[in-house]
Image 1: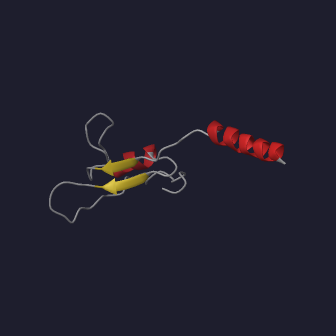
Image 2: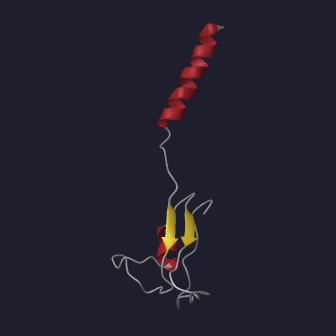
Image 3: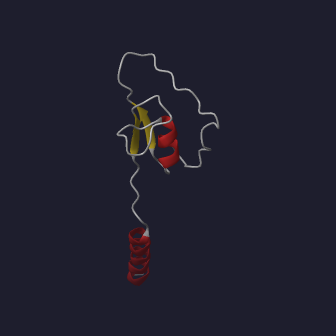
Length: 85
């Protein structure tokens, strides 16, 4: 009986350790300008959607008085394929 318990524990431990640890990120949108680029120090909603992964959060922290309006780009936004975004 002890052998079966030890075998189960070992199997669970190996499975748990073999799974990669993935930490969700928080992506902060800091501009309403969807034409901003990757190295300009700003993050647009379009950039956030394109870089988001499973479990990530998109947060809005646009400076200045609101309300803020984000215009949809001509081609639209990318399809969201991340789970639990």
